[in-house]
View: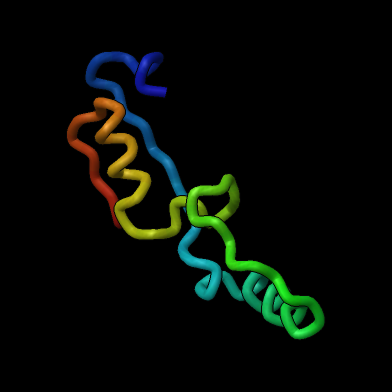
Length: 73
């Protein structure tokens, strides 16, 4: 994304908060876990909550060379 962003341009990204703050998915997961044992999710695996930890995506984008990164709106 940074490679194709114009100089002075901006990116806007949105990520989900942690699973427990998403009632639909959290309730479904909780009900299923009563019937089947599921291993803990790998925090680095692709998935809906991969960037749920505050600042995680901002850190990755900064490492990639982005400047003036803001997070937490």
